[in-house]
Image 1 (cartoon, rainbow, N blue to C red):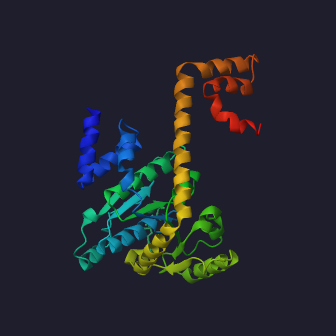
Image 2: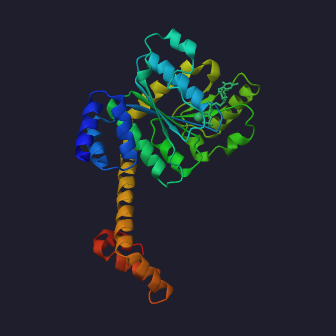
Image 3: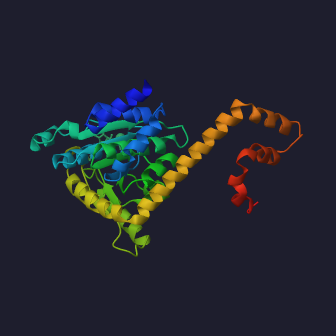
Length: 324
Ligand SMILES: Nc1nc2c(ncn2[C@@H]2O[C@H](COP(=O)(O)OP(=O)(O)OP(=O)(O)O)[C@@H](O)[C@H]2O)c(=O)[nH]1
Ligand SMILES: [Mg+2]
């Protein structure tokens, strides 16, 4: 029954059904039966989309900017996927600017697929769900996938690390809070956008960013570019979109980035497998409870019980042992 359903969904997906794309994302996200078959089957069709991360403090205008970038690129014929992580503001699927739609009569809303993900709290769950959803959109044939996140938690930073290009959105009035943006994100930003440039202080932010970029002394080029935008009016966004696509495609050519991404993916999947094996086998047969009791009574110690419990997979840990 389930197998039939999955087959049918994959068939519809291959025939361009947006509904099937949505359903497959849900199925994979919830790890429902057949999820792994789905991911294995679509894998050969992945790797073509350009994945852009948009991050920055709450309220900076990330969603507004994402919508306009999506509209601009969809108007040029790109298929767009948007993944919004814990969104607090609604997405219109690229239709935010009514007049822009009129300017681009060829734009069809089906070109823009929007998906929200709110899996905060499940450790490692967010980057997993976002990564799988992006792969599905990629295999579906989307050309550009934009991920919006506020980039605060460890999980979100993992999400950002898995993109081809990172846009960091700043706003006037942040003052010293530029320093407060997660250092790790600052360093991996490929493009800086100073949004809300209709407000006072935008030039100051640009100057602050410039001196910060100079301090980071980029040996292999001029360093990331800074753009000023007024996303609510769409001002300056086209140049951002154009530069993002160009630079993102260049980044995508670097084999190192692909290697790092695949290596991370393999490690993450292996970790998940090991974790679920541990949960299933130890909790199921009461080994864990028994071990806890023995340690509490001082009949054994945590180190010895772990060795005993890992006896079935002992060979796996011989390398690690050298460091004991
Ligand atoms: N004045 C001005 N307001 C803007 C601009 N861009 C966005 N806004 C407004 O800023 C508010 C927040 O915009 P969002 O796009 O929701 O910001 P966000 O970064 O996605 O917010 P979160 O997802 O909640 O972190 C909205 O009221 C927008 O209309 C801009 O260029 N100028
Ligand atoms: Mg938002």
